[in-house]
Length: 151
Image 1: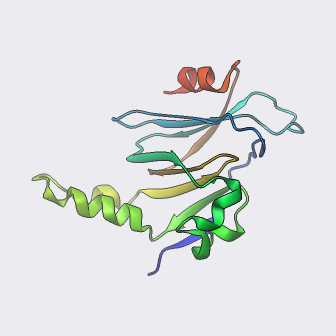
Image 2: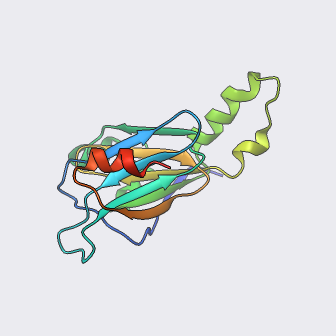
C-alpha cells in the first residue's frame, strides 16, 4: 500500500509560536521531545512526548512556513496541524532493508514500529518507535526539562 499520513490526536497541543522545542535521544531506545504548552492550557507544565524503543529520531527543516516542501506534504501532511502518523512508512521500510546485512536480522523487529511526525514552529520532528507517551514535567527551561524527563 502507498505511504500516507493521518492526523494523530495526542491529547495535548503545544505553543505553535514558541521555537524552544528540545529533542533528546540516545542510541539504546528512549527519545523525548520537550515542548511548551499553549498559553491557554490550564496545565502549564512542559509537555514531554516520550518514545521508548525509538529506532530513529530527527529534528530538521522544513519549518512551518516551508512545510509544503516536506516529502509527505501531498501524502496527507497538508491537513495536519499538530501531530501525525505515517502509515506504510517508506522510512521504516528503509530502516528494515538497511539492517538485512546483519547476521541476526529479524524483520519482525520492525513490524510494530510507527512513524510519527510533529509540526513545530522552526522545524519538523520525525520519530520511528513502537508508541508515544505524553507526560507533563515541571521544568524551568525546555532543554533542562528534556534532560530531566528522559527515562
